[in-house]
Image (tube, rainbow, N blue to C red):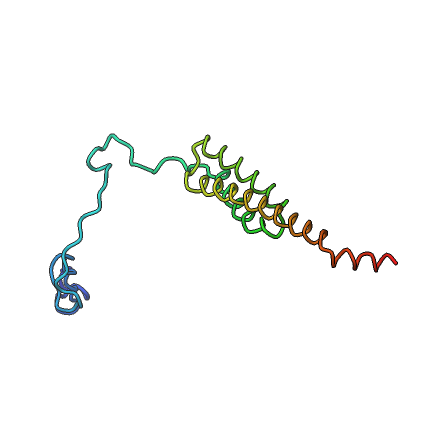
Length: 152
């Protein structure tokens, strides 16, 4: 009796065929001859008692990142504003060394140390250069004459 109900007729409500497995070529797909993909690795399936690998806790990197940023900014400022370059270079150098001691990311800490040291060196060179230029200008006889004319 339930066979005569509407919707139970096999011809009136056809069921679509199941999709083809991904490993078999299908004439309707553009890359019909691609190799099947490997199944995903599930460590919990091979060892059900072991917890799945989660990557561990996030590694702190605040000191290393700060060292890198301060070092780069100090390096950029070291020529025009030498005193800021020296102060920023020292801060970057100290932060980078402390970050290395605490085991923070090596690349960022090393970048901070190198750029901080370069900022210090360039700032000192810039200060010496400015001192030499000012000293040479003050010893120029033409400048001495012009200063004497201004005093009169």
